Structures are given as C-alpha cells and as structure tokens.
Amino acid sequence: MFSACANPDCKKGFDYREGRLFRFHKAHRASEAPPNTHSVQHFWLCGKCSEEYTLAYEGLRGVVIRYRADVSDPDEACRSVAAA
Image (cartoon, rainbow, N blue to C red; front, side):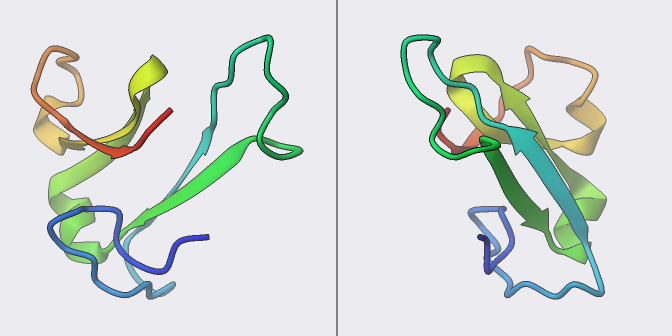
C-alpha cells in the first residue's frame, strides 16, 4: 500500500480527496509464482503532480513517471518509480 505521492521528488502524504490513483498488473516470469493473488500494484500522484505527470508500466522496467505531454512518445526520458 502507498502512503505518499509516487513522484520521487514530491512524496506528499496521501489524500484521497485529490490526485490520481493508478493500478498496474505486475509482470512476472512464467517460471515464477505471482507475488500475490492478483499481482496488482497501486500508486497515487498528488493533485499537483498529476497535472504535470502520469505513470506508465513499461515491460521489465516496471512503473515509470513521465511528463503528461510525453505520454504519446515512448522514446522520451522517464524515471523508474517501481521495478518490474
């Protein structure tokens, strides 16, 4: 469970009244058992960060944070939030 904004530069405490919640299915190798029953990870961006950023799941990199304007361009630089 998360307790703060997923933006590594922010870390504002979670507030259900603002921001955006993200849910990703965590990938795992076929030879491995899933880490939990549903293999789901939850992340939250605070209101201010969600205006400028979004989160995306990228294969073996895991969850990354991207500028919202760069969402359509997969080659733009992004930072890892959680490993795959």
